[in-house]
Image (tube, rainbow, N blue to C red):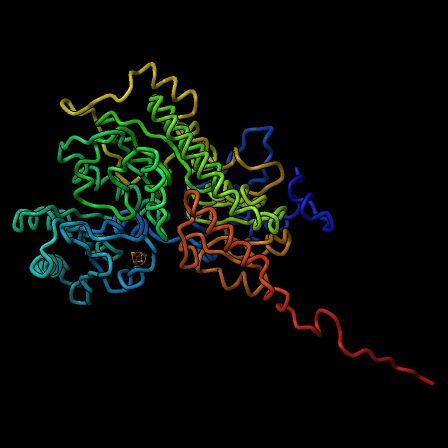
Length: 543
Ligand code: SF4
């Protein structure tokens, strides 16, 4: 049970089960009962269940955000050629203004609004008398100034409470201005985390934008789903796919484009990077248009090659397979050569990963490339299928907190449903683990490692003190607490303003930065010299 951790901390006498029990013991009985279900000590010999996607315990200092953050901040906000209006008081808009590093570039038509922050800036009057009038005025003003191709409206907490009908406003304004205007009811209190916002965003994008233009695409084409181009990740993935002879038709939604989504249904296959935020879109596109999806991971050298080989198996074209193998051979060799000196200095070190809903799994592959082990991993807002694999989907109960997130009723499109593979072939590819399947994070974690869902601040600090990881990868809220404890911290949300970390070149960037962090001499100064070893020695002699 304690194998992996003991290997690293031979000098420390502890049992991982005791560590967990000591955490739980600190909580009041009711909280202890709840939190125990969110912590799993991995035992690969048996199927294990974790509690996830349920309400956070009040006052526990969670790292979670809200539904608005998941919808506007994560999925819709990165679309470069739409104007995204936040309907609410200024806070939500201001704090999410360019703080997520989803990069983008203007297309030939020049529409590009990423650097702006659009808000209706609701005041007391709008809360009392309603904000619809102000919202209409904001849409008209934005249209007059920028003439965008499409606009999105995002509800914040008060909007649902006062009853503003943003969907009717969107419909009427769309008619008046002659452009697509899509409203998202993503009030912060919906669901229990960012996750509800992802689902709402997927629904709105799918219902109102995806699949509007039947424009044929040439060659092998894919959509990259759940890739947000943090620090340029999507561009590195695009570079590699391009070398293989595969074109990216659209990316949901890093550097994403409204125009590209309208014809995204014409691609051959969807590649799912972040399963949590975009699996709804993958499922709905498959049902309506017949596009299968492949779970990929472009984080890590070996993981990138494995994902490319899945694509080769899917397309079944000898020339393409040959080209993919050539790219893998060249890129792997170059990346491994560049990583080798860092790996020498990192081999055997341990990592503690706590990220949103996918990276705590993806980065384990990259750490493996560096010779490092992940001893704790967890998610803010993942569901059980992200931890345990999609086989558990039929057994997940939707509780009262998530029941108000609509599930769309999707049917095959009578004219445009086009199966990409015959059903037998598809079944076989699924059995081989290539299409329409995801095994989750836990299966990749060894005996005695820890999986923690919706970690509390106390749990994070306690685990750090007990397990002494060499690096903690999480977000901005706890970065400086971790570093003040003398432990290097790498932000895996915004990459500490660096990147890309995806693909082969990204892996080299990451290796360099992890080496710089862990082997930085500054950590040896965290303790004052007189604390580490006393400078003055004295003796009291009594005669
Ligand atoms: S919880 Fe409400 S107020 Fe806070 S950021 Fe989310 S939408 Fe805005």
